Picture 1 (cartoon, rainbow, N blue to C red):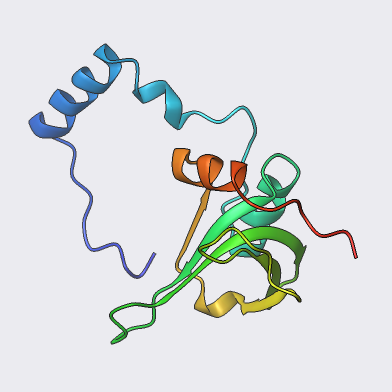
Picture 2: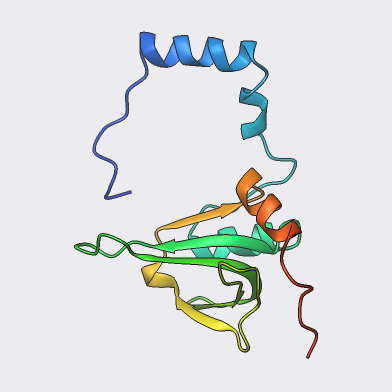
Length: 127
């Protein structure tokens, strides 16, 4: 919340809403389940049963690139997320990655990019 500087809704937003509704694109923002927005752990828990494959981004202040994790949620704690990472060639890492919750700045799930990428990923390892 501290990052939100202002909120506006005016003629531009109304025009874009009309266009998006007219193209049938606005309905894509409605989810068939509730996402708990009290924090990243709660949000991830509420989507994990529907969409275990996610993209998690950690954009540190002053870091131009940040960290980008694409993979499958394994465990969600209050301080750490355990994700099985998939590299850019569609291969699963040998061991899961621990991501500190305090570093997470963005989570994506069920996006066209993620769905397509996961289709060409090696089968999930079942150690």
